[in-house]
Length: 152
Image 1 (cartoon, rainbow, N blue to C red):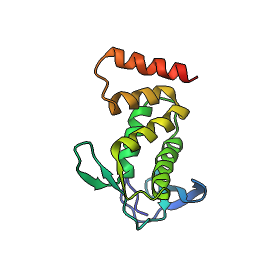
Image 2: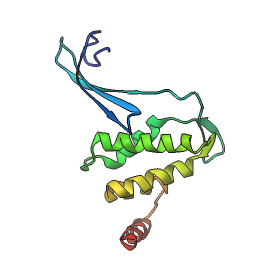
Image 3: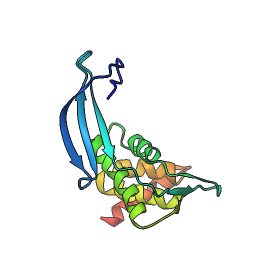
Image 4: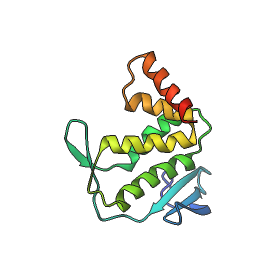
């Protein structure tokens, strides 16, 4: 594995863990040249393509990275670990594939992300919902927070 910091081709594995019920292998690595530590993930590649139907009706290949970036932005400066964020993205992807979807509306993906975030961190949930649902005023935030409080 190539070091992302210095480009050295030899790195060593410090720790290996499985996550997502054994479907993902997480490896903590270290470069002997520059002592940089980094994490890699191994996952089985699925041959069934999953397509996303966007709001404008166009279609694109499902990209787990987009989900993870949205979750990461919503969880910024909050006590949510990278592993929790990875688990949410992996769970959503695996659920969609297990349910046999060939194409899925982006609204369904956003709804699933919000449901998962609600259980992990409610501030992250409101942050994600504000972008996903395109809140335009303070009243939208108040309504969403009232809904959260009502769900308790």
